[in-house]
Image (cartoon, rainbow, N blue to C red; front, side, top):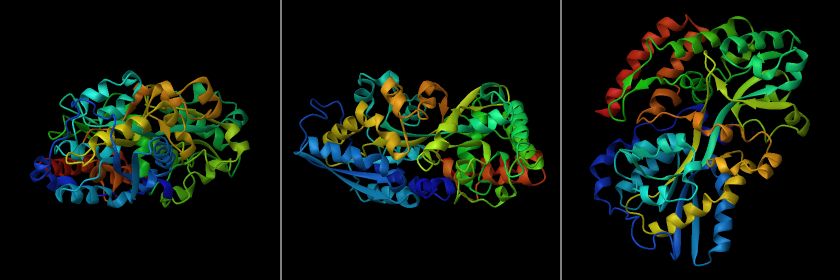
Length: 435
């Protein structure tokens, strides 16, 4: 859990709001200049999130070994301080050359013209069509691209096939929609007094958002509507959202979740599943596979997260790489970004607990080495994360309306009142951030 600090909630939500007055004064990077990304020398300053540093360290070492005239200096920044520190550096006119940023925060800086327009060099990549469209969408504004996806942190359903077999369940049939999942969880619960059908960290805002929203997104709707800067709340009347909340409420009422779920803040996230005591677990690869025993990994299978009507999706979390305007070595920055996104580097990302952002990384050799790390790559178009300036305020923080709505709907009075309150709180936050 410590590896994914943002999942516990609490990232800065509004630190970039003061950028508008100063980001436009920084010298704009010209990515169309001849030789951009070739023949650069000197140093490239790269900032990364502490939570995802493991996904980048090997790439930096490999690049530095191969490029003695152009060296990368990597600076990890605590996740909870990243947005504030980057905004401060930009305001001070001394940004790093590359920011490896939580993809959900990309729009905070793109919207305020703090990142370089890299459209031509990004669309000119020979693997552009294989890049995760969900991650690219978080880098897009007015049909221009302001960065390159680097690593993916996707939510999926992990299932314990041994418990499924014991309960007489077929994985595909039993995970196709919310009704089948509820029935499967009940059947698994009956296999043992200490066995539960489902597991979730019910008191961790970021985890709740990471694993429950794809049930809604799979239907093609979000909790917001409209473009960045002009968004409105879409909570009340959202059938897919209401059905998801009712599904989790039923899991709780029927005792298919352990009693510890109510207070679980994510500090031991996944321990019950890795111990073989849970049948179905919505989670990430990094929070589940690396710490599991070889025997337990052999029992695991993954499927994408279904909606009430049988469609599927997953959270397109992870990191995007961007070059701030005003960077001192933008050509060197692009050289490193290309290297980090090379096929060999992308295919090594599961070693750090992450997925590639390129679907062409899922070669036969990759699948053999990482049998549990190809699901999102095989359906890369189904990934999603919302373009918004307010994600952390709306979802990640412990005081967020999404978290409060989920808690009240599942453990409290039910979905109706919880959704009504969330509608007004979503709108209040969107109005504030977009003012």
